[in-house]
Length: 242
Ligand code: CA
Image (cartoon, rainbow, N blue to C red):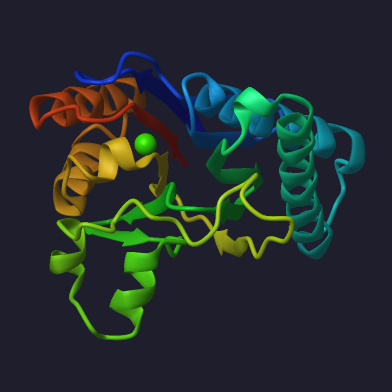
């Protein structure tokens, strides 16, 4: 599998509150988008990536089945949520911090995904791009209810209001999903600094034309997000199954 990752501050923000992990040896890939206060966002996203990675290292054996993996991913997110909330209780200046997270654990041809918030996973297969995660956002719920369309959602004034984030509430309902990868498939994990700035069709076209060079695909996506305004931090991980 080919793997590449890029994280960029963008053109407007003064710090990068996105965090990521790309550990090819363990097949573990994580993207998190922190929020809250002056330093809270960075603390929350960094803490989430570390907590999830450590939990899975301690609790997930090499021969775990799909069901064990889904359970472990769920508990890892609960543990990350607990650690962020505990830190906020100890350090009041961090109050209100939280983070999204999307993670993929890839073993052989199976990718197990888990997420909280509006950081996304996409599958690029052939000519098609498919969003694998459902945003935990107020606007995504309104779209689902049929009140507005996906296009209207892109410019909706509430589009950044999350219905769930790590650190925001004692309870969590993470999105979980397992997919079987075919040869030539690419999976992309990214923050909203990518998806707000670059349309899905354009993302698909970049990933497809650079399938053999995932480093270049990541660079092009960051460049395009910046050309289109770079209004937020930009983080993208691409996994390509040869
Ligand atoms: Ca963001």
